[in-house]
Amino acid sequence: MPQPSFLESNHGTRIAYHKIEGISPGVVFLGGFMSDMEGGKALELEAYCRRVGRAFVRFDYQGHGQSSGQFADGTIGLWLKDALAVIDQLTQGPQILVGSSMGGWIALLAAKARKARVKGLVGIAAAPDFTVRHWAELSAEDQQTIMRDGKLEVYSDYGPDPYVFTRALFEDGWQNRVNHGPIHLDIPVRLIQGMADPDVPWQTATEIAGNLTGDDTEIILVPDGDHRLSEPNDLKRLVRVVNQLTRQI
Image 1 (cartoon, rainbow, N blue to C red):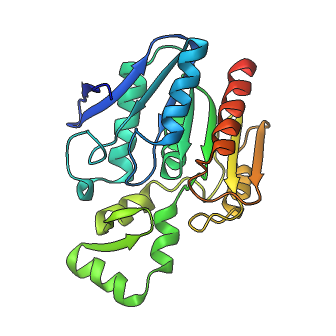
Image 2: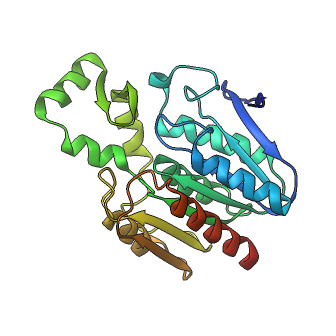
Image 3: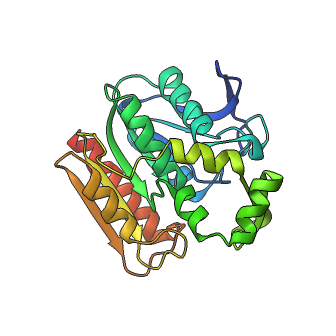
């Protein structure tokens, strides 16, 4: 496995990344909560971009993968700063953001912050404002634990390490809500969503589409699709959607 390069950001994160030079529009992959840039979707997109000679970047947020820092110190706002540093310093010209799960939230925020650069967006089980929904689903006891101890560790089916939910993550997530009203973006957006997703209700995609102010939004529902959407057919679909979007842009 090739070693990553590192970007020393102005806000303190040493961001690990892999980059391919190529034609525009470039593609930037934004991973999910406690995921890294070595997942199947990121690598499949990199292979596609390499085949067609398109610029591509994948990276790890602070506390993820090979970037610096501790996961528990991260927030949506900090990970957004990581994404903006990557867009600003590692890419040129128009870009398509591809965000998986939490990466879909950060992609929406980044697109709003860099309207002159971001010309398209693909969400894969996009989970904007997931901290707001997750807080509401917690038991009163778990909420009290977070308020008292500052964090809660939750084990999941996605790996041996617990997910760490901090009080700072929930408070910062509230400040960075994006799907509670109009999302002022006038770019093509494609939302790929599994209807068997146990983590993000498929209706989330329709809520995002309803809030987007642009007139070029499509929802692609996968009847038996899970949250990862990383099966061979899922990866082929992702490449097809991104390829079509690059041609359109």
